[in-house]
Length: 103
Image (cartoon, rainbow, N blue to C red; front, side, top):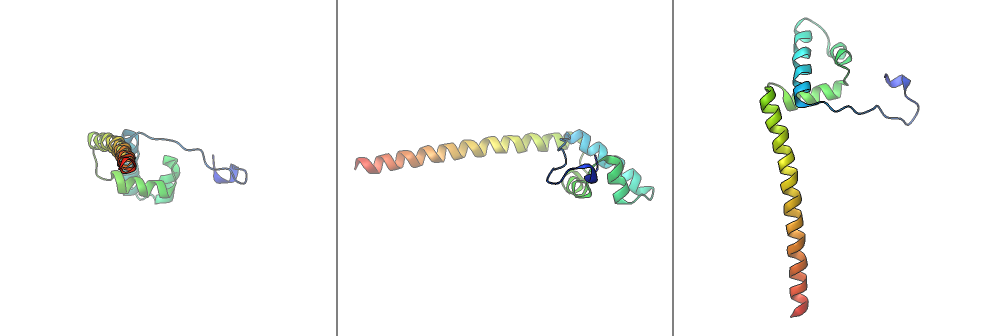
């Protein structure tokens, strides 16, 4: 679907690519770029925007599949731990407030 196919106010549908797919697409892009293709042409063939391509290259450039998988696992674990810390901090604040009210 091209931008011109969208009605006013509609957004492009979001696709989620796994880290393995992203690294595969980046490898394809590097091959095409080394053969003289321009970035816009590469992005069109990979069906991603140039912004997405550059973001992927910044985040996953030079990574192997196992490293990307580990990165995503660590990001998920980090989110889980941040939620846990936030919940515990809230509990602590509530207990502190209750203790001050009893004095």
